[in-house]
Image (cartoon, rainbow, N blue to C red; front, side):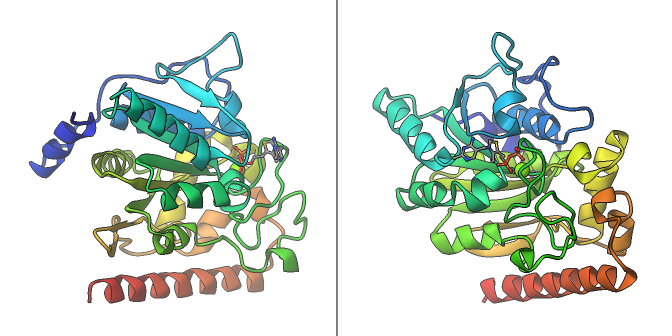
Length: 310
Ligand SMILES: Cc1ncc(C[n+]2csc(CCOP(=O)(O)OP(=O)(O)O)c2C)c(N)n1
Ligand SMILES: [Mg+2]
Protein backbone atom coordinates (compact mmCIF):
# COMPACT_ATOMS: atom_id res chain seq x y z
CA UNK A 1 0.00 0.00 0.00
CA UNK A 2 1.29 3.49 -0.80
CA UNK A 3 2.27 5.74 2.07
CA UNK A 4 0.78 9.20 2.69
CA UNK A 5 3.70 11.16 1.22
CA UNK A 6 3.40 9.84 -2.35
CA UNK A 7 0.73 12.17 -3.64
CA UNK A 8 2.24 15.25 -2.10
CA UNK A 9 5.58 14.48 -3.68
CA UNK A 10 3.85 14.49 -7.04
CA UNK A 11 2.56 17.94 -6.11
CA UNK A 12 6.15 19.11 -5.44
CA UNK A 13 7.20 17.78 -8.80
CA UNK A 14 4.49 19.69 -10.63
CA UNK A 15 5.76 22.83 -8.93
CA UNK A 16 2.74 23.32 -6.66
CA UNK A 17 3.80 23.05 -3.07
CA UNK A 18 1.15 22.46 -0.46
CA UNK A 19 1.69 22.39 3.29
CA UNK A 20 -0.80 19.78 4.46
CA UNK A 21 -3.62 21.35 6.49
CA UNK A 22 -4.25 18.42 8.78
CA UNK A 23 -3.03 19.08 12.32
CA UNK A 24 -1.70 16.04 14.13
CA UNK A 25 -0.15 18.03 16.98
CA UNK A 26 -2.49 20.17 19.02
CA UNK A 27 -2.09 22.98 21.55
CA UNK A 28 -1.68 21.86 25.12
CA UNK A 29 1.76 20.25 24.80
CA UNK A 30 4.25 20.97 27.55
CA UNK A 31 7.18 22.56 25.67
CA UNK A 32 8.80 25.76 27.02
CA UNK A 33 7.90 29.02 25.22
CA UNK A 34 9.87 29.34 21.99
CA UNK A 35 10.99 25.70 21.93
CA UNK A 36 11.83 24.52 18.41
CA UNK A 37 10.80 20.92 19.02
CA UNK A 38 6.99 21.22 18.83
CA UNK A 39 7.39 23.26 15.62
CA UNK A 40 9.52 20.44 14.20
CA UNK A 41 7.11 17.75 15.37
CA UNK A 42 4.04 19.58 14.05
CA UNK A 43 5.65 20.01 10.62
CA UNK A 44 6.93 16.45 10.48
CA UNK A 45 3.51 15.01 11.32
CA UNK A 46 1.86 17.24 8.72
CA UNK A 47 4.32 15.77 6.21
CA UNK A 48 3.85 12.14 7.18
CA UNK A 49 0.13 12.04 7.85
CA UNK A 50 -1.96 10.09 10.37
CA UNK A 51 -0.77 6.57 9.43
CA UNK A 52 2.31 7.13 11.59
CA UNK A 53 3.55 5.57 14.83
CA UNK A 54 6.25 7.30 16.84
CA UNK A 55 8.63 6.08 19.52
CA UNK A 56 10.63 8.36 21.82
CA UNK A 57 13.38 7.86 24.42
CA UNK A 58 14.07 9.95 27.54
CA UNK A 59 14.54 13.62 26.75
CA UNK A 60 12.29 16.64 26.25
CA UNK A 61 10.54 14.55 23.56
CA UNK A 62 9.18 12.23 26.23
CA UNK A 63 7.34 15.05 28.02
CA UNK A 64 6.49 17.59 25.30
CA UNK A 65 3.65 15.57 23.68
CA UNK A 66 2.00 15.55 27.11
CA UNK A 67 2.33 14.11 30.57
CA UNK A 68 -0.48 11.70 31.42
CA UNK A 69 -3.46 12.25 31.39
CA UNK A 70 -2.79 14.96 28.77
CA UNK A 71 -1.70 14.14 25.23
CA UNK A 72 -1.40 16.52 22.28
CA UNK A 73 -0.66 14.17 19.37
CA UNK A 74 -3.21 12.44 17.17
CA UNK A 75 -0.96 9.45 16.53
CA UNK A 76 0.20 6.62 18.83
CA UNK A 77 3.44 7.27 20.75
CA UNK A 78 5.57 4.71 22.56
CA UNK A 79 7.94 5.80 25.31
CA UNK A 80 11.09 3.75 25.98
CA UNK A 81 14.51 3.85 27.64
CA UNK A 82 17.13 6.36 26.56
CA UNK A 83 19.48 4.08 24.66
CA UNK A 84 17.14 2.06 22.46
CA UNK A 85 15.32 4.19 19.88
CA UNK A 86 16.62 2.16 16.92
CA UNK A 87 15.82 -1.20 18.55
CA UNK A 88 12.32 -0.07 19.53
CA UNK A 89 11.62 1.17 15.99
CA UNK A 90 12.79 -2.20 14.60
CA UNK A 91 10.41 -3.99 16.99
CA UNK A 92 7.44 -1.80 16.07
CA UNK A 93 8.17 -2.27 12.35
CA UNK A 94 8.36 -6.05 12.73
CA UNK A 95 5.07 -6.14 14.66
CA UNK A 96 3.27 -3.96 12.10
CA UNK A 97 4.63 -6.00 9.19
CA UNK A 98 3.53 -9.23 10.88
CA UNK A 99 0.01 -7.77 10.96
CA UNK A 100 0.25 -6.74 7.29
CA UNK A 101 0.23 -3.05 8.25
CA UNK A 102 3.16 -2.05 6.10
CA UNK A 103 1.57 1.22 4.99
CA UNK A 104 2.28 2.68 8.45
CA UNK A 105 5.34 4.91 8.81
CA UNK A 106 7.46 4.18 11.89
CA UNK A 107 9.32 7.18 13.31
CA UNK A 108 11.99 7.02 15.99
CA UNK A 109 12.22 10.57 17.34
CA UNK A 110 15.15 11.33 19.63
CA UNK A 111 17.31 14.17 20.91
CA UNK A 112 20.93 14.81 20.01
CA UNK A 113 22.24 13.23 23.23
CA UNK A 114 19.97 10.23 22.64
CA UNK A 115 21.32 9.89 19.10
CA UNK A 116 24.96 10.86 18.68
CA UNK A 117 26.04 9.53 22.11
CA UNK A 118 23.63 7.26 23.99
CA UNK A 119 21.54 5.40 21.39
CA UNK A 120 24.08 5.45 18.56
CA UNK A 121 24.60 1.69 18.85
CA UNK A 122 20.87 1.07 18.67
CA UNK A 123 20.44 3.29 15.61
CA UNK A 124 23.39 1.59 13.94
CA UNK A 125 21.83 -1.82 14.64
CA UNK A 126 18.55 -0.74 13.04
CA UNK A 127 20.47 0.37 9.94
CA UNK A 128 22.32 -2.97 9.88
CA UNK A 129 18.95 -4.75 10.01
CA UNK A 130 17.66 -2.60 7.16
CA UNK A 131 14.63 -1.57 9.24
CA UNK A 132 12.13 0.38 7.19
CA UNK A 133 11.73 3.46 9.42
CA UNK A 134 12.49 7.14 9.72
CA UNK A 135 14.85 8.22 12.48
CA UNK A 136 14.50 11.89 13.39
CA UNK A 137 17.08 13.60 15.56
CA UNK A 138 15.90 16.97 16.86
CA UNK A 139 19.09 18.76 17.74
CA UNK A 140 19.02 21.31 20.54
CA UNK A 141 22.77 20.80 20.91
CA UNK A 142 22.91 19.56 24.52
CA UNK A 143 21.23 17.31 27.09
CA UNK A 144 18.56 19.92 27.73
CA UNK A 145 15.98 17.95 29.70
CA UNK A 146 18.49 17.39 32.49
CA UNK A 147 19.69 21.01 32.56
CA UNK A 148 22.03 21.61 29.62
CA UNK A 149 25.00 19.24 29.70
CA UNK A 150 27.35 19.06 26.70
CA UNK A 151 26.50 16.36 24.14
CA UNK A 152 28.44 15.10 21.13
CA UNK A 153 26.37 17.54 19.09
CA UNK A 154 27.18 20.70 21.07
CA UNK A 155 29.07 23.14 18.83
CA UNK A 156 32.58 24.12 19.86
CA UNK A 157 32.57 27.30 21.93
CA UNK A 158 29.07 26.91 23.40
CA UNK A 159 28.53 27.21 27.13
CA UNK A 160 26.89 24.24 28.82
CA UNK A 161 26.99 23.28 32.51
CA UNK A 162 29.75 20.74 31.74
CA UNK A 163 31.64 23.08 29.38
CA UNK A 164 31.48 26.34 31.33
CA UNK A 165 34.34 27.82 29.29
CA UNK A 166 32.90 26.58 25.99
CA UNK A 167 36.32 25.41 24.79
CA UNK A 168 37.17 22.44 27.05
CA UNK A 169 39.50 19.80 25.63
CA UNK A 170 36.81 17.14 26.10
CA UNK A 171 34.75 19.10 23.61
CA UNK A 172 37.50 19.84 21.08
CA UNK A 173 35.98 18.04 18.11
CA UNK A 174 32.68 19.97 18.27
CA UNK A 175 29.59 18.55 16.61
CA UNK A 176 29.84 14.92 15.50
CA UNK A 177 29.18 14.51 11.79
CA UNK A 178 26.31 12.21 12.43
CA UNK A 179 24.82 12.33 8.94
CA UNK A 180 28.08 11.27 7.30
CA UNK A 181 28.59 8.58 9.97
CA UNK A 182 25.19 7.10 9.13
CA UNK A 183 25.85 7.28 5.39
CA UNK A 184 29.00 5.24 5.97
CA UNK A 185 26.86 2.86 8.03
CA UNK A 186 24.55 2.29 5.02
CA UNK A 187 21.52 4.54 5.55
CA UNK A 188 19.16 4.78 2.53
CA UNK A 189 18.40 8.51 2.77
CA UNK A 190 19.56 11.33 5.05
CA UNK A 191 19.03 15.08 5.20
CA UNK A 192 19.53 18.06 7.46
CA UNK A 193 16.43 20.23 7.85
CA UNK A 194 15.55 23.35 9.78
CA UNK A 195 12.27 24.61 11.29
CA UNK A 196 12.95 28.00 9.68
CA UNK A 197 12.59 26.34 6.24
CA UNK A 198 9.25 24.55 6.73
CA UNK A 199 8.52 23.74 3.08
CA UNK A 200 11.92 22.14 2.72
CA UNK A 201 11.41 20.19 5.96
CA UNK A 202 8.11 18.81 4.71
CA UNK A 203 9.58 17.96 1.32
CA UNK A 204 12.54 16.06 2.82
CA UNK A 205 10.26 14.20 5.24
CA UNK A 206 8.01 13.08 2.39
CA UNK A 207 10.95 12.01 0.26
CA UNK A 208 12.20 9.98 3.23
CA UNK A 209 8.74 8.48 3.72
CA UNK A 210 8.59 7.33 0.10
CA UNK A 211 11.89 5.41 0.33
CA UNK A 212 12.04 1.92 1.88
CA UNK A 213 14.73 1.11 4.44
CA UNK A 214 16.33 3.18 7.20
CA UNK A 215 16.18 6.98 6.74
CA UNK A 216 17.50 9.85 8.83
CA UNK A 217 16.49 13.49 9.32
CA UNK A 218 18.59 15.87 11.40
CA UNK A 219 16.47 18.85 12.52
CA UNK A 220 18.00 21.90 14.15
CA UNK A 221 15.77 22.76 17.10
CA UNK A 222 16.64 25.91 19.10
CA UNK A 223 16.22 25.74 22.89
CA UNK A 224 15.71 29.26 24.33
CA UNK A 225 16.49 28.22 27.91
CA UNK A 226 19.65 26.27 27.05
CA UNK A 227 20.84 28.64 24.31
CA UNK A 228 20.03 31.58 26.59
CA UNK A 229 18.15 33.48 23.95
CA UNK A 230 14.94 35.44 23.57
CA UNK A 231 12.13 32.86 23.03
CA UNK A 232 10.53 35.11 20.42
CA UNK A 233 13.64 34.75 18.22
CA UNK A 234 13.53 30.97 17.68
CA UNK A 235 12.83 31.08 13.94
CA UNK A 236 15.20 34.02 13.36
CA UNK A 237 18.05 32.20 15.13
CA UNK A 238 17.29 28.94 13.32
CA UNK A 239 17.33 30.75 9.98
CA UNK A 240 20.64 32.43 10.79
CA UNK A 241 22.16 29.03 11.61
CA UNK A 242 21.71 28.09 7.95
CA UNK A 243 22.39 31.55 6.50
CA UNK A 244 25.76 31.68 8.28
CA UNK A 245 26.71 28.10 7.35
CA UNK A 246 26.66 26.93 10.99
CA UNK A 247 23.91 24.45 10.03
CA UNK A 248 24.03 23.79 6.27
CA UNK A 249 21.04 22.09 4.64
CA UNK A 250 22.00 19.12 2.48
CA UNK A 251 20.90 15.59 1.71
CA UNK A 252 22.26 12.21 0.79
CA UNK A 253 20.08 10.50 -1.78
CA UNK A 254 20.76 7.85 -4.44
CA UNK A 255 24.42 7.72 -3.33
CA UNK A 256 24.94 11.44 -3.90
CA UNK A 257 25.29 14.41 -1.59
CA UNK A 258 23.77 17.74 -2.53
CA UNK A 259 22.93 21.04 -0.89
CA UNK A 260 19.17 21.49 -0.55
CA UNK A 261 19.35 25.18 0.34
CA UNK A 262 22.07 27.14 -1.44
CA UNK A 263 23.50 29.85 0.81
CA UNK A 264 23.88 32.99 -1.24
CA UNK A 265 25.66 35.94 0.42
CA UNK A 266 26.62 33.91 3.46
CA UNK A 267 26.43 35.96 6.67
CA UNK A 268 29.23 36.04 9.25
CA UNK A 269 28.79 33.55 12.10
CA UNK A 270 28.88 36.40 14.57
CA UNK A 271 25.33 37.38 13.55
CA UNK A 272 24.16 33.98 14.74
CA UNK A 273 26.34 33.81 17.86
CA UNK A 274 25.48 37.20 19.27
CA UNK A 275 21.77 36.40 19.65
CA UNK A 276 22.60 33.62 22.12
CA UNK A 277 24.13 34.15 25.53
CA UNK A 278 25.62 30.63 25.48
CA UNK A 279 28.29 32.19 23.22
CA UNK A 280 28.62 35.44 25.18
CA UNK A 281 32.03 34.62 26.72
CA UNK A 282 33.75 34.17 23.33
CA UNK A 283 36.66 36.48 22.49
CA UNK A 284 37.00 37.98 18.98
CA UNK A 285 39.79 35.44 18.31
CA UNK A 286 37.52 32.56 19.30
CA UNK A 287 34.73 33.92 17.08
CA UNK A 288 37.13 33.96 14.13
CA UNK A 289 38.13 30.40 15.01
CA UNK A 290 34.46 29.40 14.72
CA UNK A 291 34.25 31.27 11.41
CA UNK A 292 37.27 29.25 10.19
CA UNK A 293 35.70 25.99 11.34
CA UNK A 294 32.52 26.81 9.41
CA UNK A 295 34.44 27.86 6.28
CA UNK A 296 36.47 24.63 6.37
CA UNK A 297 33.39 22.51 6.99
CA UNK A 298 31.59 23.99 3.97
CA UNK A 299 34.66 23.45 1.79
CA UNK A 300 34.82 19.86 2.96
CA UNK A 301 31.11 19.36 2.23
CA UNK A 302 31.59 20.81 -1.26
CA UNK A 303 34.40 18.33 -1.90
CA UNK A 304 32.27 15.48 -0.58
CA UNK A 305 29.44 16.44 -2.94
CA UNK A 306 31.77 16.72 -5.89
CA UNK A 307 33.33 13.31 -5.12
CA UNK A 308 29.92 11.62 -4.74
CA UNK A 309 28.95 12.76 -8.26
CA UNK A 310 31.94 11.02 -9.88
C1 LIG B 1 20.37 5.61 30.53
C2 LIG B 1 19.92 7.00 30.95
N1 LIG B 1 20.88 7.92 31.23
C3 LIG B 1 20.52 9.15 31.60
C4 LIG B 1 19.19 9.50 31.71
C5 LIG B 1 18.81 10.89 32.17
N2 LIG B 1 18.33 11.73 31.09
C6 LIG B 1 17.00 11.85 30.81
S1 LIG B 1 16.69 12.92 29.59
C7 LIG B 1 18.34 13.25 29.39
C8 LIG B 1 18.79 14.28 28.39
C9 LIG B 1 18.46 13.92 26.97
O1 LIG B 1 19.20 14.72 26.07
P1 LIG B 1 18.82 14.73 24.55
O2 LIG B 1 18.76 13.34 24.04
O3 LIG B 1 19.74 15.67 23.84
O4 LIG B 1 17.32 15.29 24.54
P2 LIG B 1 16.84 16.72 25.13
O5 LIG B 1 16.65 16.52 26.60
O6 LIG B 1 17.88 17.72 24.82
O7 LIG B 1 15.54 16.98 24.45
C10 LIG B 1 19.11 12.51 30.29
C11 LIG B 1 20.58 12.59 30.42
C12 LIG B 1 18.22 8.51 31.42
N3 LIG B 1 16.89 8.77 31.46
N4 LIG B 1 18.61 7.28 31.04
MG1 LIG C 1 19.34 17.65 23.27
